[in-house]
Image (cartoon, rainbow, N blue to C red; front, side, top):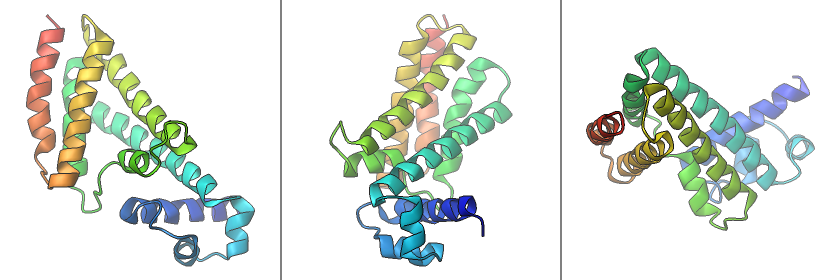
Length: 188
């Protein structure tokens, strides 16, 4: 198997394990076993577990944001409707059998120092999500696109936490109803 594919194999298995069990609770030996690679192979690609964690977070960011944007744009054509479709995308995610909350919320709790590279990457992910929402708000003609984006993002984050912590699979739809009020107010 090519080196690049071994690297991806390690990242893919680590992503599943970290998402399911957490970063600190998942040991390197478990990753090696699940990825079916040697310790030497893992350390040829990653100098440390933290380096692997950063690679996993980068991949999750790319996968999550691309899927979120693709699904939002598939569900709605008009910018206003896309702002609301974001909540449907989240709601669909909450209903997935493998849903275990937001990897970035979970990681930022485990790596709580604001200067920790993992925490910084988590904050960057959240900023990029907000940037996308702001772009949709601009396209929709919001009076203050950044403020609307921050408000909708706050609802989305709350829905994610509620769905994960309380198991409320309808949190996305509840947040959507509140979001619709904010969108209508911002587009007046």
